[in-house]
Amino acid sequence: MCKMEGKHVEEENEINNSEEDYSEEEEIDENVGKVIDVAFDARPPSDSDFHGVKRLLQQLFVKHINDDLSELANVIIAQDFIGSVLKQDFGTGSDEDSDEESDDDDRDNVFAINTVVNISENQSLSCIEKINEFLTSKCEEAYKGEPGLMRKLLGDPSKQVGLLISERFINIPPQVALPSYESLKADIEKAVRKKKKFDFTHLVLISKTYRSKEGGAMGAEVFYSNPEEQLFCDMSEFNFTFSVAEQRDSISDGQWDDEGDMEALRTVMVFDASSLGHLIDKLRQEIPAK
Image (tube, rainbow, N blue to C red):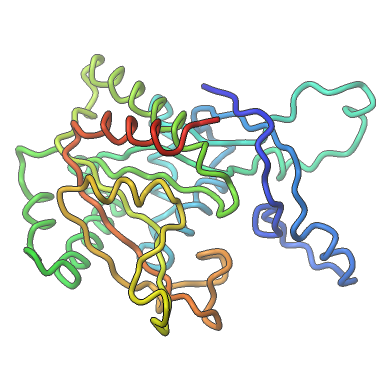
């Protein structure tokens, strides 16, 4: 789909997705905080991306729908005409480079995903059912304006609701968002022309957010793991925020753990689907791709 060259990425053990234990502390310290140049390639999801896609879904949903994430990952991969995954572009390299050992897991790493899933259709699928239950129950708990609004929206047969999934590792820069959303919008328009069920009336985005546990100088201010999503929140029809502190596990939320000063949250935003172009325009103004 598109290439993103020369992005600076702070390399962390989380991104390497390695289960290997290092015997010497010096070996760990070599990679932490290192800045490297990486070329990314955005491409349609494929079967080889299953584990990488599932891991990003675990990062977003934490334990709420854990048992059904394999099914959701398969749904995303099956609709390979919509959305993209971000992977490292290793290039062709020299003969000398090609002789070097390369880890297949590194080549299969998925650094980001940007796609949309129709949650008004296929409600017989367990993952779709669980997502809808999750969204409606959290709206009833957290949205004071009209607690039943999400249930009403998802239960309306005249509405088609798409779940936007825009997830990436914490140290992938926000500049990847613009080309990803531009490509997604083009994919949706092409799917609609082919009479596929992507003619949405509404879009829902679940955003990773956090706030200070103690308040203090930061008060109750909500911060966004993906900075562009703060721009989106201002354009939503309605939104609500809730804590996931009790739901997290070792692969969730990157640097925010139970011993830290930050409380892990999720913010759900609901948009009129026609506003996707306006969201992209906002991104173009505030967080350009380059």
